[in-house]
Image (cartoon, rainbow, N blue to C red):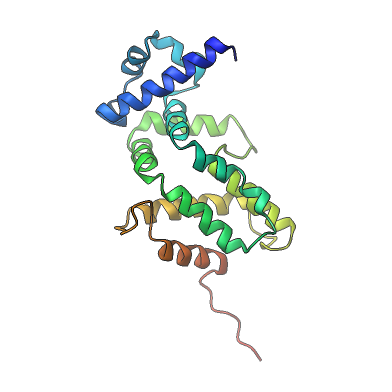
Length: 203
């Protein structure tokens, strides 16, 4: 990407955040975002495949330090416990709920945004999703290779379940100013790691 292209993309991301703060995701049209960025509406699609991608880019740019920490999660495989690594990761991500939760709800409520997300994933068969889902799956796969995660589970599926659990916990009332209740999050991760089936009876 040229310097000019990078500058235009940065303006679009900044404009997206500005328009969303003013009117919310549901009413943040590409026309309004392009106007705020001082570009033609068609310019958006030279930098982003769809509106949903532009929304996510705006959120991720705003919370870059957290996303960078999560991207380094796979390097923690074999260090500390799987439980503590996952709790640390999800707790950091929970601090993004004020930005991510409205976006996730918009994606669920807006059929076109949901279709855009589906098409983007379908265009990358077999590839891990970018961002936190892919990083968590890569971490779990690395722990699996070390024998610290069961060999018969699919890291991609477990990552989705964990993020869905975090999403659900984010809807619960919490005294935490920076995210979900850490104790509740720890209990949820422990439950996912151990399952709900009773332990086999010892002879």
